[in-house]
Amino acid sequence: MMYDAIAGGWALSVSAMAAGDSAGLSCGGETFARVFADEKGVHAAVTTRWDGAKKRFGSDEPLVFTLDAPSQWGDARLEWRVSGVRLYVENVLCDEDWPLGGFPMDGAWTLESDKPALLEACERFPEDAETVFDGSAQYFTLPGHNTSIGDCMPFEYGGEYHLFCLYDRRRHGSKKHLGAHQWAHLSTKDLHRWTLHPIALGIDAQWEGSICTGSMIEKDGRVYAFYAVRMSDGSPARLTWAESGDCVHFKKSGRYFELTAPYEPTSARDPKVWLGEDGLYHMMVTTSLADMEKRGGCLAHLVSENLIDWTQRAPMLVPGLDDQPECSDYFKLNDLYYLVYSNQLTARYVVSDRPFGPWRRLREDVLDCPGCRVPKTAMLNGRRLLTGWATEGPWGGRVVTHELIVRADGTLGARFIDEILPGFVKDASLAPAHIEAPLGSGSAHLADADGAFRLKLTLSPKRENMAFGLDVTGEGDRVRIEFDSAYETAMLMRGGDNVRSAPRGNLLTQCGWCRGAFDVTVIVCNGVAEFQLPGDHVLLTGCTLRPPYAIDAYARGDMDVQPK
Image (cartoon, rainbow, N blue to C red; front, side, top):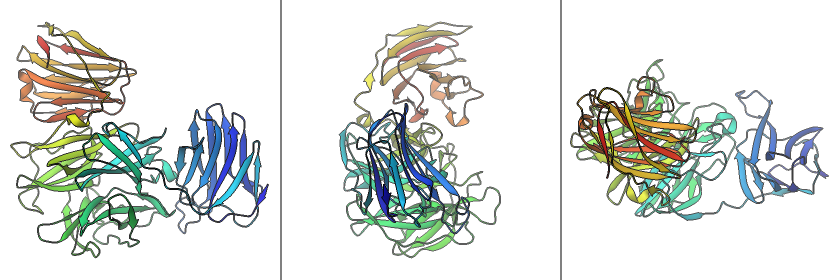
């Protein structure tokens, strides 16, 4: 079948695809779109030519984008949406990517197919449906075989907790590793019944390499979402905003600005905006000082009277780390101002008695809990909640939310939130156990679980100098938390790690409470293992554990274990 070239959107539909079937769309003897099926499912390959002014991907070189629908066969539909391409099987979205470049427009298109097939020009595509679900967004990720949650941006609006987060496919690999991130959106009033909204901020043009992390602010009844666009051609990032009257439907402003000296503009991202006590709007932006080759990562500081016109000021913070401070947050609690930022995915913070510093570190500057990646905060019903993600693969993972706690010394802690726990997490029971190993090591089996569980217990070490802990074994992996009463430490370990090889981010110090009896709560759900510890500490691992589970206690010394 021959078709005139289609300059805009189009859809290629192929009926009843099974292993061995294929359909191809070509021009001038070269296939630029192909849908095919094998024993693993239905797949699609789209080949474009980069037409950007800069040779970031090679001028006019072909770029191949591959989509997969694992274990899916039947009616297939490949949609070219100009800024994105989607693969549906049996009307279910199975995969998508956000391409670069275009197709030949200087000749007729030829469609060849083993099965009945149809090519249609499409001026518009329907908006994705809104979904309401009972359950919890704790340990949640978005539907799809290659999806994950990235950086989270919570925001309180109208008594609801709106959770915006980076929608990721391919673990940051979409759009030739530019990420192609967009803002997914969930909301709730009670942390139990959630609504999954359509994408709040999406990629609408091919020059948008990724919609980066940002923040929201309300002004005169409207919500302003500030963000940066990572440019497909590698040019300086564009800072911009979108507006909404209901915190659901956003319209991009179409107005952009870039950082200038002394700041490096290309990597600019993650704007955090708030109204200061001085009546001005303030913005922090992740970037670097252009004249510092090492440890020059900083948070640029900008001010505005109207959220539109921005003026640069000296950096808010130059932490002196080996990477840029990302995904910053800013809030006031108990007469202290807190500035939170992430480095190598771990959140750190500084405090001040004044709105803009000078900033200082407290005795603990890693935000609980360190396994919750790049978290940010928002209020809900008088509580400040902290939301980030637990890793599941090279990048991205599942949503994790805790309540942020201010300790008496001004340091920040975290607590589990009972009402956000998924209903399918069952309380595990255990009988009292005693371990007696005065010179060696002993263990006791505590419980088994076929699925997600919560276990509350009290550990009572009986000697002054001993190491002891809990061991959770699942299908293909193991998580262990070890306490050392001599060094007053708690260390979380995975697999075959030991106290020397485990990441230092999983180490807690100054744990004097482990010298006596103390309570521990363990939650394992959707692969995530979390431990609530005394002093409002939480340690967690990434999404690696799979049922069935076995929970054991061990001690190099004598210890009692009691159910709580």
